[in-house]
Length: 186
Image (cartoon, rainbow, N blue to C red; front, side):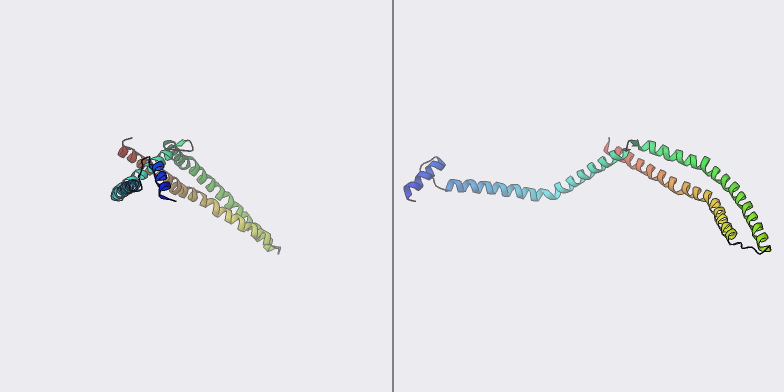
């Protein structure tokens, strides 16, 4: 390319006759300096902005989670607490006494059956008849008697652990949500 063609190209691109590359170089230098300044400011501000942004994101996530917990699957926290209290009352006032009564009556009935099985075993042994099936039935009835007397104990343990734990969890959750609401003012 000769000098005249190059001059015409430079004039077409820049709009000025005889203009070469220094003006383009100055613009590039100014843009690079501005970019470096912005990057430098970001580096200086990052230690202050990042923890602030993390804190705001944690608060937003907590607020969102607490909002979801206030009403899970259409059931409010207050309704869940009332249900736990009603369950506790129903188990302690109705289910446990009925289970104790059934255990007492059932245990007495099973005890009478065990006495009858012992008498039958003795009678069959006296006449030298095999008592193996009768002994197996005696073992089954004895295990039933043990199981039926353990039922009220199991229900009482359920009442004292599972329902109490559920109530404690729901109350702690309610306190945490109330504290968060009072801290955020909303």
